[in-house]
Every structure is written in C-alpha cells, then in structure tokens.
Length: 209
Image (cartoon, rainbow, N blue to C red; front, side, top):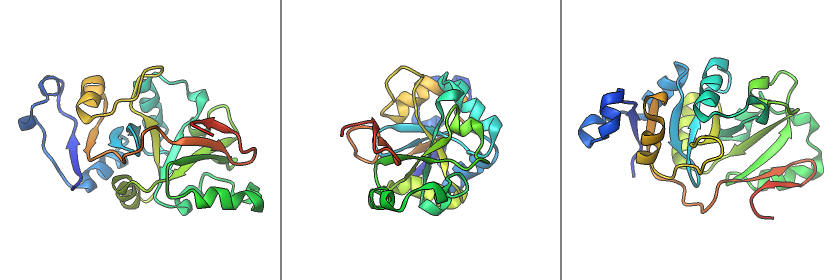
C-alpha cells in the first residue's frame, strides 16, 4: 500500500473531513513540513504518533503544547538506523555486555533508554541524562527518516493521560490544524506501543517483561 501524505486542512474543511478536502502528495512533502518546523502525525508500529524535527526547539515545544505534555518527561526518537541516533546517544557509555541485547532487538518495537550526550538538548531529554531511541522496521517511518536524514521525535498521538489514537480520522478530529501534515499509511500491526527498556539496568519501563 503506498504512502500518502495529507496536508492539514483549514479549520472549516478539517471538521467535515471529506475525501474531496484531502490532497495527497509524495513523502517529500512531509519532509518539507518537518524542515519548516511543523508537527506531523504519522503511523508507528501500533498507534499513530506525533513527530517533528528533534533539533528544532520551537517545533518540539509546539508538539509538547499540542499534547499538553511536561517537557521534564523527555521524548522518544525513532530512526531508520542506529547511526542516525549517534548525535544524541553517548555510545561510549554503553557497556559491551549490553550491546547484544540492544542491537539484536532492532529494527523492531523495542525502545531503549540510553546514555545521552551532554550536548543533547534538554527539550528531548527532559529531566534525565538519558535519551530514549528506537530503530524502527515500519516502512513508512523508515522512508521518512531516510529522506529527512535524521530521527523523528516519536510520541503517541494523544492528549496526555488519554488513549493514543488508532486511526487517521480520529487524529484529525483531535488535532485538526494544530498538526501540519497527516501521513496516511497503515499501522505496523503491533498490538501495543513499543516496550521501553533501560539499557544499563535492564528494567522494563513500559510493556511486558
């Protein structure tokens, strides 16, 4: 199934959300939206997510405002490959005996909390000295990260404390024009959001053991 990128509509047309109001473009348009500092909504392994350029403080703050999420909690980055994570992860602080567990789980639905470089922005790490990252197998997200040339911020498409949205139509009803682009592609088929594990302690922070 091909990926369609739907630009956010004006508030009047977003309410009706009829097919005539949506115009599909190539994935490059979503990348352009990211480069312009916009927030996009896109499918992940199990639910739709909100994302933006992790290096754009204004974009991240806009995303947090949309979600009503506290910056202190930190955010997840989703990437096409581990190399894209290296500007944010302090790879030298990952012990050799932990690496097999981390890299054997990727690409896939496991998010690892890894040591962050001191230069990693606090709008990503929040109150932590770590950064949560995932190398995805989702073809749409991989294509976006490849074309963008870096990871995306990946946080569930929901208001804080509410259930993540599981359809594009639901996302549009919730976020309307607060989101710059909606990526119309299937979810990855997982039954639950990614498991989150702490790389150094092995603790499972979200999901099943």
